[in-house]
Image (tube, rainbow, N blue to C red):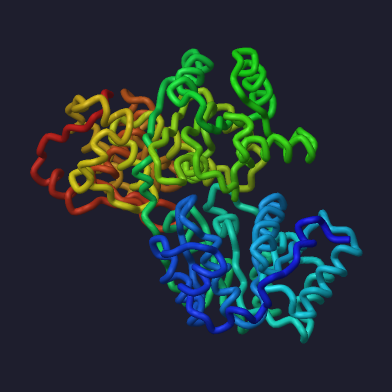
Length: 527
């Protein structure tokens, strides 16, 4: 027998909505009256048969972008998803609505796989969830190649996992490219909540997408207050945040299982309503703790990063990052689980540079440590930043945030809430960075330019002849971390821009102007 979520009675025939309008399916199948931003355009583009890449923030309604076309188009929609628990939740939800759906992953017994396959071949199913590693198995290849199985759409959820430039690269995702050979006429839809320009280009290339339309929703979540506090007496800071949201739901993220368990016990001792969640717990305990949180039986879940993907809980009022995330992409996804109902919520990061050293310990096993280092540096710069955090965060994803156009968000972060930030004369250091970029022909990223300024004699710097240029070693009076921070501020101020997949630093026209006029530069960073 199949799992319980497969045993619901299908009340919507597979052909009930074929050739219907998206608005009809939205209302009659899902009970919504109107689309969210970009949803209708994305759905229509898929229905038109165009490959589509959609970057939508957490809570932006990505699932409907493939579920609605799946009901309108003939045949089935394949959804490639990395999380087994998410598949099960999605299938359970769809089957309750009467929409024939199945998942195929490592949890199915052979008999269960055969029953799911029979339903697919019989035309009872509209949406099939498959794990990326499952695509490599012969049984799934045979199923998808069966002449009785017509595949109309291939959807890739968490599409950033296909990019080595992303924060969560998964080699299994590279197998997805092969699915095009099995169903060359199917339209492809790639979905992700976080993707820089380099990651977007990687997604298109590695998935073999055919001239895709790219839709990018705003990354701005105006209802989430962004706050960073020094990680001093962290338990007290956590309790202060919980007290600000007394009786409300919250998620606390920790890097290690040990930290999750210790913090959970500390909060239990203080009589807070809390459970833990991490891969070291049994499947049964994890499921019970997750359900207790979703159903409001407990207020707080303390978890590692896996928790929350695909969890539909709109009333999370606060997210605390107890430890430093590995990247701004990871951080953005985690805080995006707060306030999905649009009501005021808080994102609190407990910041210490010491956490970065712990994260770097895991870089030793990576094929390309420089990519992980770049992602981590951006996260550290965010935590140390003295400029509007919303502007910094959105700028990282290529979105320009103009506070003057959002007067209702004048206190959108802890920096802005303090009022006017003091400015410091950084004219000379700014000139040093810009001149070093020019002397190295604007061909390198932040780490390389900084190493030249600090007088590093790395092999690459020597081979490039950059130990002989005038800017070599002229920045030894400032720490490496401060050079990184200043560079990010210059990017936010519009003096520098990053280009290409390697984030090469380039001067803007404003930078060339200040070099020519030698005007004074003031930024909110004390060097």
